[in-house]
Length: 97
Image 1 (tube, rainbow, N blue to C red):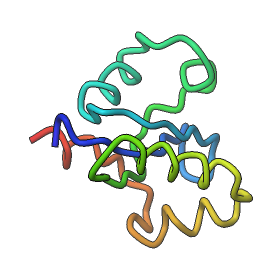
Image 2 (image 1 turned 120 degrees about the vertical axis):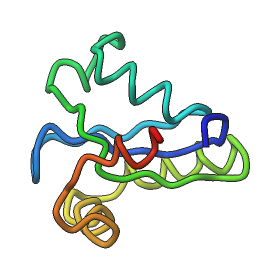
Image 3 (image 1 turned 45 degrees about the horizontal axis):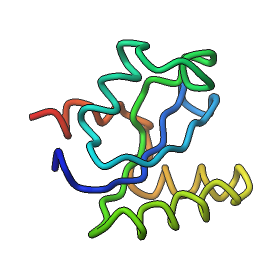
Image 4 (image 1 turned 90 degrees about the vertical axis):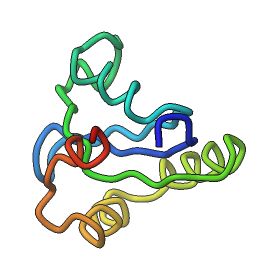
């Protein structure tokens, strides 16, 4: 999973602030967010819970998906999260095994 392109959503808490990102290394990127090594929106709003991710076969597909999801309204984003993760559990342990 480390080198697979992915779109991910971080949250500050359930129904809290959402951050949508894209990366070629999901484990490394989420770890960086959790350690607050990445300055910006996610750090400012303490969005460190990995509540959703989707893996892609290539970076182009991941970037396209990220752009689409970012344009969605908040309700659609919440439905996307809750379809796979209804209780907004932090998925960090799932990817970091």
